[in-house]
Image 1 (cartoon, rainbow, N blue to C red):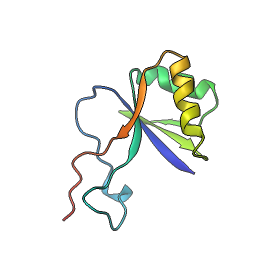
Image 2: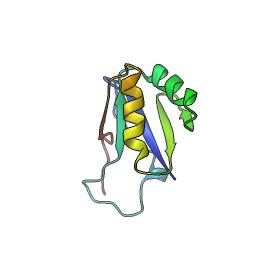
Image 3: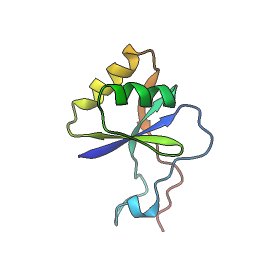
Image 4: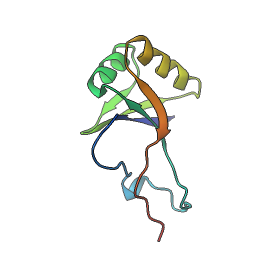
Length: 97
């Protein structure tokens, strides 16, 4: 099982995982796929109503997924509920020293 981060579109400030979430060895092209959504609160409500394991953080969500085919399922569910969304690399300001 992995978690899929979900962030608000147009958010202010970069998304950078805490050091304890970074792998021991990574290259400067390290990235994390995530969803950008037009309405974070509505996204949380829709996914929770459909019994996805969604964890609300202070400025983003984390969705637990078991299979790769859940990605299009989640995106289609959000679109059907009028929530604009897209997959993107969400990591910013990671320095390899």
